[in-house]
Image 1 (cartoon, rainbow, N blue to C red):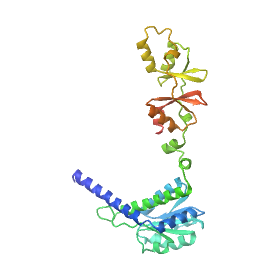
Image 2: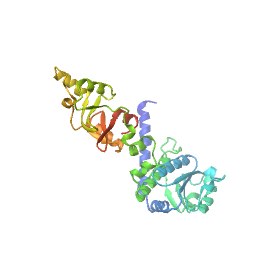
Image 3: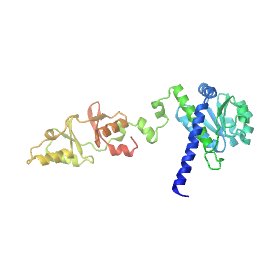
Image 4: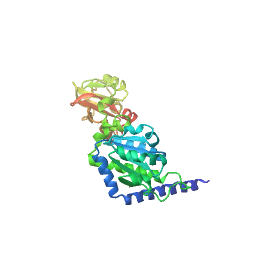
Length: 319
């Protein structure tokens, strides 16, 4: 098969799924609003039930809900009737996902889900199914056609299910006032967590190059070259008065014939940009990018505290 034909097939599949999502958007109605209201007002958690491909969708929906402030747990339909039903409490709401709504495992489970939970919400592509019959609220996930060539493999249908789950999560976030700081609490690891919570002080360089205003050229060169950052900070005590980079040194050497009496005060750059150690690391990264510089001075209540390097932040996933 030639490459153009393959791309045509791919584009057709994506177009089919886009159309099904448009159809979903246009039929969101009072049933969706009622589902959001039931989940939001529940005193327990949301139990998401599924089997087959719907089980994979259910797991993803649970992960999204948990990370955005709605406590949720997945329950596999085939395991539920062999003891796992005990996870459902009377205060919980059940969201049962099944495209056909008539899978044997789901049908066998429905009376128990309805009895054990506070409410049963069905997500199905078959509004005449057993799942629809037992559900207090029905989320219509029907599709006109699957995106696969033989129109059988769950493709468009699982995309629609996923989108419905995301829509529920987003609405619940807005209603509960879930914000960035709340998201950070549930994502302490990885680049997401670091960008939301990590502070500048966590990424300080182990080196703290420093000279005084009266330091001579030899002391300056030793300080700059002894640091892996090509920079040294000029201080009076711990107060920052300037900065000298290896570029400043090169320009001075090209300009001055006798460097024996040159001091740090004469070649330093004044008012260097700095960031407090308690600032978010991503704020430091923003300054580094804006100024197109590789290092930034870190302060503690205005006093010199250390150096932070752009390469360290990039390595840590800060952006």
